[in-house]
Length: 63
Image 1: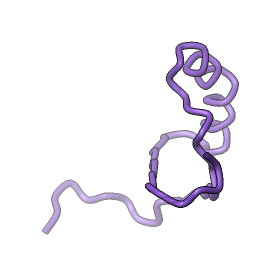
Image 2: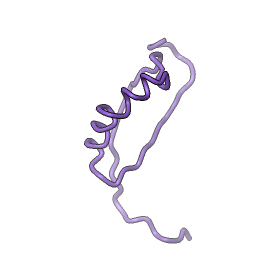
Image 3: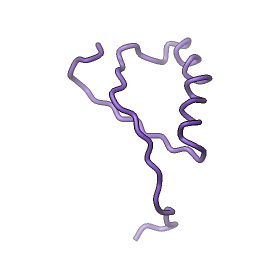
Image 4: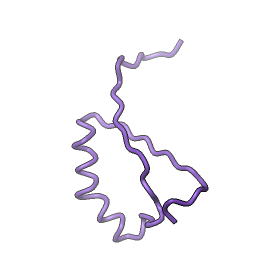
């Protein structure tokens, strides 16, 4: 249940568009479908959410 100690889960998503728009789109369209299909758990407690922006372009090769 929410507030209990135990396992930890981290989800990281990358989007080409604006991160806030992507979260809002997920909340509006995908989340209700997942919930209706029984794919979301009521015991998950979101404790923190943040947006990170890439500061450099990724290189084609890693050296």
